[in-house]
Image 1 (cartoon, helix red, strand yellow):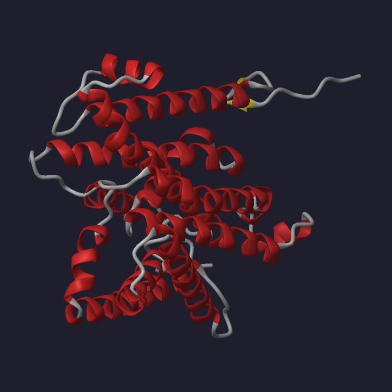
Image 2: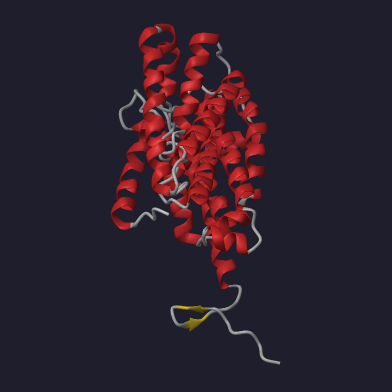
Length: 349
């Protein structure tokens, strides 16, 4: 009986489990990076706290001033940052998968602006002020954006293509940003409540807010991981995916629901944070290949690390003032987008 050939890497036979070991190594490294980012987030701020003190507080509590700052201010901020970054990383991965477009992410396709517009209208018209109310409006706005973008991009004989999706997303983003601006310029009370949230910030968040995010995050996770196998097949093309027995419409529906839910809760908690959903999936694919189960896991970890580190950098650049995390992720994400445009050819479908 002839044994199966070993996979070949760079012309040299490699052990069959080499890819799995390599991916596991990157996954462990991503977890270590996230742990480091979390410790730095807890230690750095207007009141510097040493990492040993941070770790001691996490393990044993305490009633010192440093321990109180960590428990009441920095742990909620860090936990919300972890959740928001993971949600955006996962949403960006799924957006890129269902559209087969490397430039797709919640902000570019208009989902973030739709959620932000709905929250602004909710504040101005309905007087809402808490996350559990924000998130329903944010989710409704995200759904509205997704339906609008897909309906517009699907019109015509050629149907949906990656380029049409991006163009439709840009058009809807501009429209919803205009509505948001119109509300804010005519309602000063809403502007006061919205102005820091608008650029994406983690300061002032509470553990209650983090707890309220959990059900929505859990539901989003179920949807996106349920679509992972279908996204692997869809990457080969719609005809090939159907030939492999995958229901493309179901895959896109599950992925879109998961991405919309994750984006909605992330925007409700921290505002429209730009580009986190773009950079994390590309870094994950660079390290572990195209398997969406692995890419989703690493995108969540990298998205969290990126947002936490961006938040830390924003705290220390111009003390005692802070640059919101959303502004810092945009500064990081724009060069990534430029590199993608210069080095990757976007398939028009």
